Length: 359
Length: 89
Image (cartoon, rainbow over all chains, first blue to last red; front, side, top):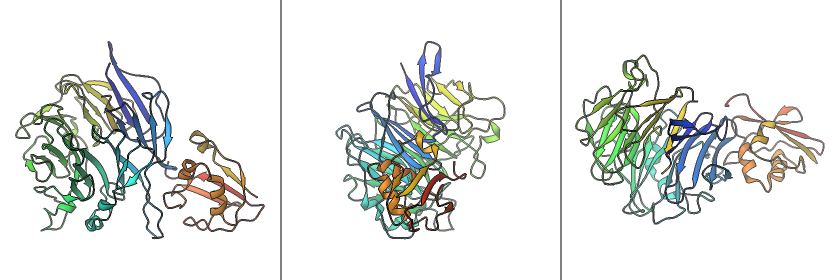
């Protein structure tokens, strides 16, 4: 039985696929708490949920029994400092499992933009100081939030010491030595929101989301603020997919588990609008590494729609056939055939921030 | 001993501790109250020990003056009341 976790503005929902299709499985966990991220660890089945309480800060919860019971863990935190602007973690934006050879290792990307690592399944956390100390960080800046943040943490399945991070806004950061040293990737990106002459500044790039092909980890896909980009060298350099219809703006991207040339996107009218182009919600798919794109709309709304798909709300499962897409207006769609046709599973959920298929 | 009361909204998230503690400042009283429950501390204070932006702390009926260091002086009969602000929910 397939299971989908839906992280929403008002709690965590579980949907199961049964004979009658996808159905919600009981009341939500963490009712009324905004869920910002869900990690269903494929190595050991542990579930991790990041919350962002409006009043009480961001929290981390873990389940060792597939969501039947939860325990609260101390979340990543910045060290106390006397500085007047000393940071505090505002959001756990990204949770990622370490490599197969690193049982219990979990990463968290936060706002403000820091990378934290746990070696004990989330019980204790250590900030990656080399990245935090990079002088370029002074030029990172927020996009949609008060501070910049780390939303993409890609772990190379061939080498767990090789990580690729996406920072909005702060570019692509790559380590080959488990986080001891970091370098900037993202050559080929072009930002149109900076002063003339700085368009290719690697630090001021806004990769909205990046995903790494499990079957060819040198292939990294990026939905950038200014377009769709694809890398063949693990994120060091990218080429842009030009003239993508209806739009190359968006937040989300998902890559097929076995076909590195195949990826899905949720286009929107850029940038000050952030709604479906012409009020028509579609999704796009490329099967040739970004050279051409198909538009899918079967099962998606025919009339005006105002759904926006957030960066962590378009996912594909391990089969490559099941896709899920959740929107800011609380709609959830599932596809069982790689996006060719979509079922509208719910129109009445809270705004959806993050989706995760059970592995 | 200063009395400490919490908003009932916190009960949904953490068991609330003993309601009395000693200390010369709000920070000292709350440190005593939070001893043994770091998680509860994190609901009221941020990573730096400041009052969270959308939490209000009242001392004897008035909002505390020092939300950064919680240095407001406390007397043995004081009452500290921790509430979520109406903003930020």
